[in-house]
Each structure stands twice: as structure tokens, then as C-alpha cells.
Image 1 (cartoon, rainbow, N blue to C red):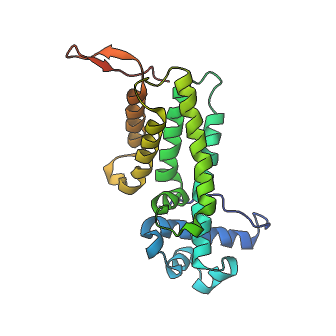
Image 2: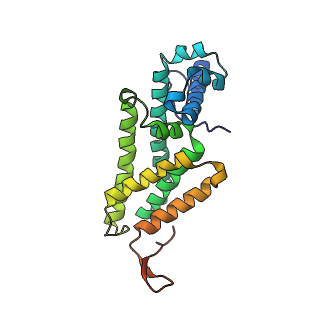
Length: 227
């Protein structure tokens, strides 16, 4: 079943109006097609078929194919940012910096793999679309990145990240790995829960400053306390 989740703008129209519902249907369809076929392979005829509309009807809402794709790309990242902010706000006051990073890992993976065709489309096509179509998307990516930057900065300040790694490089590597999951994951390769747990374990143990003795007697970086 297709993921259908996003927050396309209403352009001043009521969210319950027929026009808004149709516009959202078109965006949902475009997000799905773009996430599967990519920028070059996305045709308005495919979008119209998925939305159960006639292709010319799309032009009432979007002047061109590129305008439609630009909106999808923007919505994918802006919604992922808001989703992460909401999940962080839901954490208890005593949540540690590492707890927040684990929440960010969970939020990112679930949003791109399970919740949103918009986010999957945005991540998969970020390097494919013409630069002029990515202006709003890039601003949202920067805002999203700043949230992660602050999470890592807080973890460094609290002593929850190893001193022998570059926090900035580590953050970029982590985010790159999470993004890449959108390229290789499919249900036959395991559940989203399993992907999230594995990613959290890798990130936590890779960043953790706590040392423990391994079975071989060698000193190794061990697990941080679980949240």
C-alpha cells in the first residue's frame, strides 16, 4: 500500500474544499510516482493515472510538471523536519542528548521508509532535479540539518560522544547512511523496526565514550546505557 503522508500547502484554500482535496490527491500521486520512477521517469500521465484523474486536470493546479515536482520535493523535507521536531518535543524532560539522537534516527528512518512518499521522493531525487527546482528544498534541508547539528553539539557538551571522533564528520556520515536506506530497503529485507534498531545500535555504540572489556580481553567501546 502506498504511503500517503505530507503537508502540501493549501494556497489559501480550505483544507476541506473539493479543490484542496483534489490538489492533495495530485501531490500524493506525484510523490508516489517520483519516489518510484525518479525525476527523469516521472510523467504527468502516470501521476494522473495514479490519482484517477485526466492528465489535463493537473494543469489547473500546477502550471507544469516541474512545478508539481518542486512542491513534492519541498513538502518531503519540510514535513520530515516538523515530524522530528514533534518527536523531540514528546520526549520527557530528563531525556539525554543520546536519547534525542536515537529519537532522530528513529524519526528519520520511519519517515522515509514507512510514512511518507514525499520524503522518499525528496531524498532519492535530491541530486537529480535541476538546481532551480531545489531552492526551497535546500533551505528546508539546511533547517533539518541544523536540528541534527544541535543534537550532536549537545551530546559533545554532555560527554556522550567519544573524544576521538570528529562530531561534524560523524553527523554527516550518520545522516548519509540513514538517507541511503531509502535506496536499498524493501520489506523483503527486514522490517522497518529491525532497520531502526540496527541503526540505533550502530550509532550508539559508535559514538559512545564508555569502554568495556570484550570477550577476548581487549578494550572495546561498549554500549551506552539504553534509554
